[in-house]
Length: 281
Image (tube, rainbow, N blue to C red; front, side, top):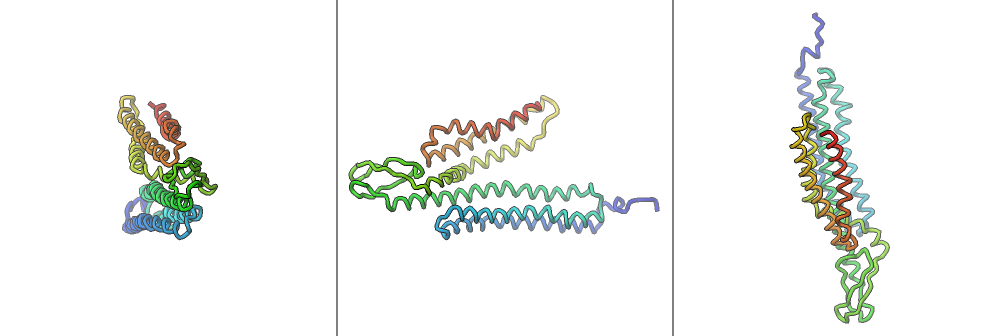
């Protein structure tokens, strides 16, 4: 009668609140399915490594398929909101009032990526370690001294040629890795990252804290942001130092490049970001 918009008159009608409850319930179910799928995924990939006779290529293909399924759950959040939730809610509220409900889905979807990234470090690290242990055992089966025939043992450096002294006759033997072993040198990277998981968690937490601080409007307010960046820098450097140190334990060629490698990664993953932020100081 007075030209009021019915949607504005009832900002939160019962029908809309019912839809909100359904949307919240849907998000909880998706989150539960995602979390519950992580552990079985780890078991499946580890089991597949043995069943596939330690074929790393097929193993990583299997993991890629599982990861794709997990990411589909994240995509389902946006699809469901756009095609089902949004049209129904717009029958009772204005478009701008949908922001809060849409953000629920966006935040949940964004939370999946770091979880998936972390489980990937764990899973690929365990697979790589399992493969490495298998490779050591396999190589040692047929490695004997060329002089006395005594059994020789390789403990590390399986990706490069090196000398092994026989414990029986003290003669020196040369170990030369096969092309297949050399091509799989990348497994060391996965093992090293997994062994630096604690440092990874700490640097990710520091990065997240730093990014959550809004850029201050006044110069005097930058103390909090500066301290956050200092902490992030410490944690980031600790992670890369741990990572490259662990990597060098498996490939001795890397021992002389640890400091340089850490510097390169810090430039790539931290210093450029801090420089961009300091331009706003």
